[in-house]
Amino acid sequence: MVVIGLTGSIAMGKSATSKIFKSYGVPVFNADDCVHQLIGPNGKLVSLIGQRFIGTLEKNKNLQYINRVKLGNIVFKDKKKKKELESIIHPQVSIERKKWKEQAQRQRSKAICYDVPLLYETKGEKLCNFVVVVSAPLFVQKHRALNRADMTEKKFNNILKNQISDKEKRKRADFIVNSGLGYRFARNQVHNILLRKVL
Image (cartoon, rainbow, N blue to C red; front, side, top):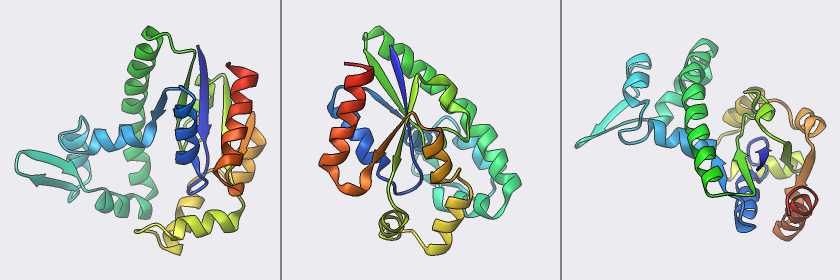
């Protein structure tokens, strides 16, 4: 089974590219979605993070969950807290990904895709046969990011600071999908990658 790593900086079009892989029948493990489940209503990490990050735990009837905005405000200002959060979340995401992969193997999938924003930062590329980096020009990226509801220029720059640069990711990539030229162009690029490596 071929394991494809998919990554890219914020607002580069990674989610859209992930959907393209799915449309070609490649199951996708989305690390962000996994984290949302782990800290969402009655998620596995809710009580632990609630204890360690005071003020982030919220309750609604019988449900407990972590307020992601409050958690984000804590870790963006404090590198130590960010590392502490990562030391809780990353190992659990690895466990969930392993279980997911085993299920895909049982279903005899030819290829699977790990959609991970911090793939290189967490050394996740070692688990992949090859890595696809989604990229676009900076002005396109910035325009997309600042169109998001909760995004500010300061927050955008802060996120970029905490990620390996797009230039560095492109250098390390086995394949680059340029999402700045529209959906059809990106789809053709994904198709060509799959033709070369999987189909």
